[in-house]
Image (cartoon, rainbow, N blue to C red; front, side):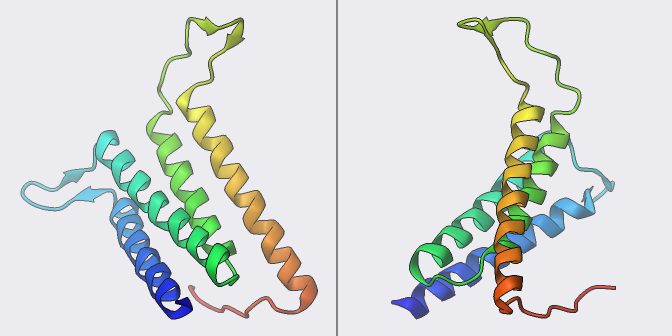
Length: 138
């Protein structure tokens, strides 16, 4: 069972990376090439976020492996979603006397929560000496 869960998590992570890569390019290839509109950008980011969050949940619940990298990427997706709401107007009405928050603020709060949980897990692993040494990128 653990091997199946691990494989499912890896597939979800790969899907999330593919979606996030398409999002990061910000180009809609074809003729003519053009920038991705906010609606499509938001859809790609939401799909990638769902992949990363589901992969993290499966790994954490079923195999107890590290998830800080998946949580970090989910946070990056939340930031991309929030950016699509950057020009959203402030809500005029309030609900039961409590002001509604903008979608931008809600998504940024979600991103910060993901980053916080990712950092907590990474610091905990570092204290135990179990943080993997990842030397990637440039």
